[in-house]
Amino acid sequence: MAKRRHVFISHHHADDARVTSLTNMLRRNALEIRNSSIRAKPANAEKLRKGLIAERTLKRLLRMKMSWASTVVVVIGKNTHKRPWVNWEIEMANRLGKRIVGVYEHGGTENDIPPALDKYGDAVVAWNSKNIIGAIEGRCDPQETPTGVERGTRVGSRGCAA
Image 1 (cartoon, helix red, strand yellow):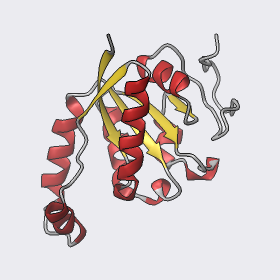
Image 2 (image 1 turned 135 degrees about the vertical axis):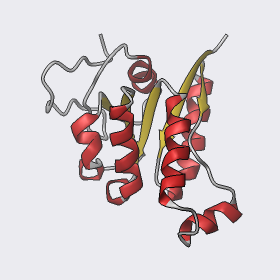
Image 3 (image 1 turned 180 degrees about the horizontal axis):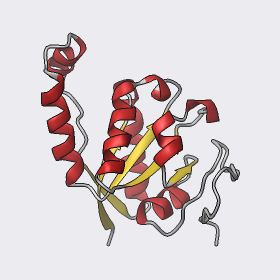
Image 4 (image 1 turned 90 degrees about the horizontal axis):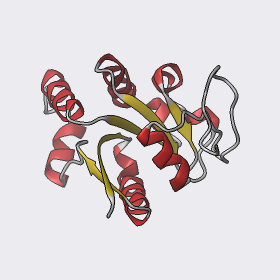
């Protein structure tokens, strides 16, 4: 039987397909993810793009969705570090006391890490189901490069290999 985790997946909307890939990969490895993040339907995505939804309304909705989750997972793509909403979500996760785990997309680089994730992240892992699950469950706190090699930038990080 698969374990279940309530998470909020922070991502750049252009990376929606990666969110689906991530949840599918974890499900195949016996971890069912219940994702509370916003994945806008096309009509709502258009309203967001045009700025027709008030910022305070969006922030309130994101806080409500995030408060339900035990962990915030940040999908790190090539433009994630440029997205102000992703940084805001990470900062809010920190204020709410959530575990924060970054996951590099395939082809990601260390330069892609959002500033708030570098500051508040509990773990940053490559696209590897074992390490992602270990980080989500809090069994390890690795700080990896996109290839899975330890970054060594944090004192006291616990790798997933042990």
